[in-house]
Amino acid sequence: MSGLVLASQSSGRAAMLRAAGLAFETTAAHIDEEALTASLRAAGQTPRNIADALAEAKAVKIASRLSGVTVIGADSTLALDDGTMLTKPASPEEAADHLRRMAGSRHRLFSAAVAARDGAPVWRAIGEARLWMRPLSDAFIADYVARNWDGIRRTVGCYEIEGAGVQLFDRVEGDPWTIIGMPMLPLLAWLRATGHAPQ
Image (tube, rainbow, N blue to C red):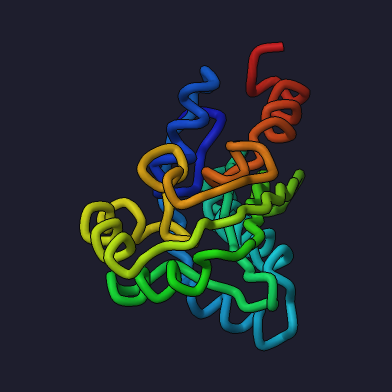
């Protein structure tokens, strides 16, 4: 086991760390994201805080069984301007519904990263991006979901902006790494400071 572990099954997050030249391993935390999200929402937590809590839960679960290893947990949440929070789609039909709800309007995406060691969090950061989705026809949505379901089923917002999802937008504010799923610049700064990345 290396000194750095990514507690995520996200290919996008792993690709970001690999592209940055980091040596790490990946392992799935297998937390019940739906139940934890529902509990946090019932307690009145904001989408921003929910992203942070989910990232922490993943990092802490893996770090509690890997002594002396630094574990990075990450998660993203999405909020419409009316405060409604959208989660990962459970079906192509739900993905199409989410896209219809976002089309022609702005939403906010929060991506959190939490580092944990020996079962306790030691660092965290949360990035925020604002995205304006262009108006979308029902025919475009149906075709987009059919072509991209295997990738978008694992994403809040039903898009991988590094791929075909870029065609959904008129405008974005925020760094691309936050949109893909992690606040990379603060994470890399912390990893350099702690010896996990080249100075």
